[in-house]
Length: 259
Image 1 (cartoon, helix red, strand yellow):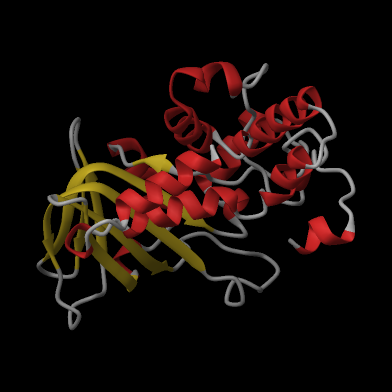
Image 2 (spheres, rainbow, N blue to C red; image 1 turned 180 degrees about the vertical axis):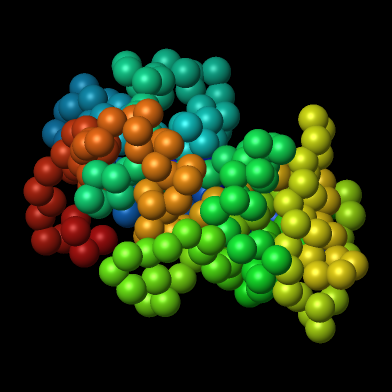
């Protein structure tokens, strides 16, 4: 998989006119904090030991979510499904470090747009960052980051310290209009095929494959959060234990750790 990652980065960087920054970032991010199992596999004394450790490391790397596993399977080719098998049990809901359910990344649908409009004051949202870039030669993608106020109360008064960030990613942009002088107020819309984010009085970001992610420390107090918490159960394993198994690299010696 390391060879495939390097080949992908070389191809994405082959021509400055079609440089694919997102592909390079994704490949590098997969290896972030995952070089320890690579070195542990390389340090095994036998071929069988290296194979066993490599398989364990691949499974560990794939446990960070369905999109990570899908990327790895695609890169590994015909052997991907065998080397990176799906989880034995269905994954439970995403949880924070206290075991409370938290929102994951969701495809923008009419239902999701309605839930967000109830829990957040979207007319008062402000654009923090908007990036539209070319991937390959013709495909446009976009990443939008919004600061949004909550529509629900936070009892302990620390809401101001922990603001809400809403991120919107568009896989294939078909329309992008934005005026930095008119960057307040957001409306989310979706139909069967496309999604759109309307910015200010005349701005719009429209396309296919629109996904939304909310970073909100107190999401469990929102309407959607209370419903998700009730459906998932009051308690669950915290995020740091969600991967199920301990790190597969064990203890590395000084030279290997430094490398």
